[in-house]
Every structure is written in C-alpha cells, then in structure tokens.
Image (cartoon, rainbow, N blue to C red):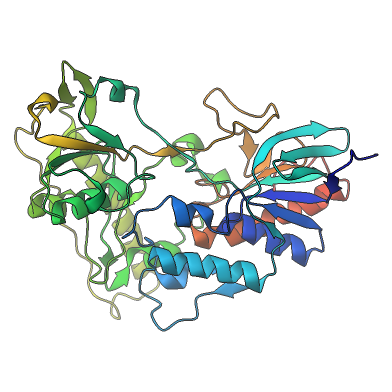
Length: 423
C-alpha cells in the first residue's frame, strides 16, 4: 500500500493516554507489537482537566496496580488525591516509555483495505489495529428536563465543577446520589450552603467492614474479578451506579443517613420540572430499601467467605448498618422560582463520545458493540469501560488484566486468527 504524503504507519494505534491506554501500551510492548498512543491533551488528561479539586480515589492506594507498576509508598490504605493520581499515571507512562503523542486530536477512524486510517490534526496514521481507550466519561449526561429550569439558576455538571467557591451564593440542588452526587452534596453542605439531594437508584456500602476496607473484601472474595461471561444480565451490570463511597482520611461512610445527619435534605428521583416547580418521585423509600438489600447481600457474601475459610475467630465480628432512614413524607416538589435554589448540579452520569468513529459498530444507544472488548469490526478493540471483561474493568486496578487478555487476542489476530471473537 502506498501511503499519502504525510501519513505514517504502525501496527496498532491506541487512542487515549489514561491508565487503560497506557496498560495496553505496556502489554503490546511486551509482545513486541509496534504502536503509538494518541492523546488529545496530555497523559492523564481527564484526571487533570475534568475532576473537582477535592476528589480522591474511591479505591485504596494498594489497589492501584498496573502491568509492571504498583504502589510503593508508606500509606497503602490511604486514598490518592487528584495531584497524586496524576503523578502516579505520569510516572507510569515514563517508566514504561509509552510512545505517547500528546496534543493530538483524532478526527476520524475509518476502515481501509489494510486495517484502519486514523486521521488527526497532526497527520494521518495507517494501522492494522486500533484500541479505543478514550474512557466512558467524555460527556456528562444532562437530562432533557434541564431545559425547563427557570432562568437565573446556574446549571453545571461534575466535569465543570471545581469547588464551592466557584458557585453563586445560595442553595444547591444536586441531582443524582451515587458516588459523585453524594460527595458533592457533602462538600457543598460543609461549605455552608443549603443542599437538596435528589436520589434515584444508588448503592450503599460501608467504607470499612469487619476491620477492612470494603474494596479489600470485594477483591479478596472475588467480586471485582467476576467475569462478564458469567453475569446473567450484562447490560444491567454495565449500568450499575457507582458505590456511595468517599476516600477520606477518617474512612467515614457517605450514605443517605450520613448526609441527612449533616443537614442535607434528601428527596426522591427528579421526575420533571413544570411551571418552575421540580417534581420528585415518591419512590425514595423503595430505592433506599433496595439499596440496603443489595448492601446486605454483599455483606452476607463476605461473611460466608470468612466462615468458609475458618477466619471468624481472627477478625472482628460481622455487623449490619442501620437501615436507611427516609422521612415519612419526603418533599415531592420544590419551587425553583422562589430563589432559594441558585445552582443545580447534574450528577446524572456520563457517556462516551464516539463522534469521530466512522466504523458501523454503534448500537441504537450509541454504545460500541463488543464481546469483552473485542469489537465487531476486525482489529478494533475497546478498553476502560464499565464491566468490560470483569467487574473492576473501569478501575485503575482492572486495566491491567483487561489489557493482558486483549493484547493476547490482538496478537493472535495479527497472526491470522482473525475469527476469534473473545479473549
């Protein structure tokens, strides 16, 4: 194939220089597969530009494990701040000598007769394989009802939020009570603002259980390593909300009870906005009960694991948290025109951006069709998505295992085993 002037060739192009893309780079290098990592900004770009100031990882430091690299500090049970997380990923890129091309924006990925053509604002790459590691949180989900918010109320997403000082004085409505919404409601209330938290589906867990971090238990028991092929409802598993956790020095819990005790007003799921009035679902009690049920099922599984191995005598006794307290008559409406609410934070999730992907692999919801990261288009792979190959796929700790397996599949594909569909 004769390449156009200005074009370059490599075997694989990795899109994204976060933990997932870098883990894949390390694994391809170990297999002597030449490649390049294209990054629209800098290494760890999303961590640098799309996170609020006080955010810490929800996973303990020891759980940041990447191929050939792991935590070596003196606080394995602590939780990294954003600057610390950025430095960790930057050091990893340096240690593995990742071939990163920063400040390179991809405008198109399309198939050609020999693989793929990756068009960027700094030239075109031709390759046999492409690994999409651009992440799941490119675009914040803002519900359509946002257009009915009265003028004068500022609306922003977690991508735009940095700290309470950047908000107008006055009350805040936080919509969404998973990890992000719960943490922002907590921070904003502690800054002196009146906060209303609209809670839909959420998953409550203790930060510490029987003397260990809940993530330690989920790792030890095998929850985080559950295989995508063993899950009954994979679509559902990939859309499960993030756990209500916060990485704090005091390892405190951050469920609805803790927020209510602080003074945050908890209401049900935002059902609509009409005539300047926010309307909330009356299902808060049911949502809270379901969250408690899921939490206790997890704790039961941990207890069974402990007992089956004869560890009951060596670790603290099991315990259960107080059930989530829900007001007998939670507010079902809030008049946004009265001026008490000056800001709405839409902590309602994210979605990936594939506007540059000119390959017919998207479903009707705009998600890439794949089998454990092996995309329907030959030679195309996906990394860094929720429950891609295992429950921990979207964590730093999950990138390595996924990269090892998918790089193995990619190598087999290059060797001619192109009919393989899963690793």
